[in-house]
Amino acid sequence: MRRQAISRQDGFTLIEVLVAAVILGFALGSVLTISSHAFVYLNDIRRTARSSQVLQQKIEDIRLWNWSQLQSAPLTFSDTNIGVNYQGWITTNSYDTYLGSTTVMRVTLFVTWTNSNRRPMTNTLSTLISNGGLNKYIF
Image (cartoon, rainbow, N blue to C red):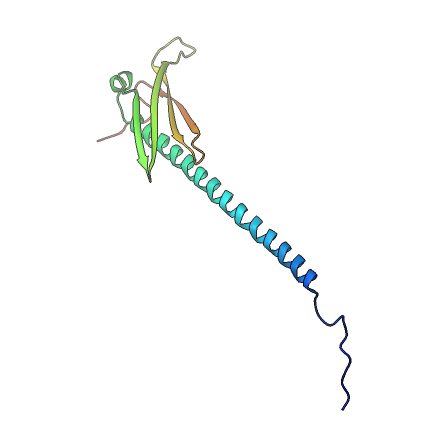
């Protein structure tokens, strides 16, 4: 019986395996880091979208007010969603038209909240509302 000679090039050396393990570990660590940052960004985007919904809902509420309610509007509002507190305030200014009439008001809403990094964020929505409105709502 003859034995075959074992070649030194048939397998991987310990150094090659360690280098491959280090590269694989670095790649896995990078993927996990990117994933955690992606979840933070996704959460901030979700909060920004919710702030836009809060502003839109408040504007829709304001559109249903009559002119005297608009002139004596409450200056602040708030909304809470999934542990995030959205604080808002309203400003109203007369908006002069080309005829000099003051039957149009600029209503600006601001809402603030805290993002994932504990930084205050602000979203703004502004619209013009006229005395008598554009549409007649029947209630």
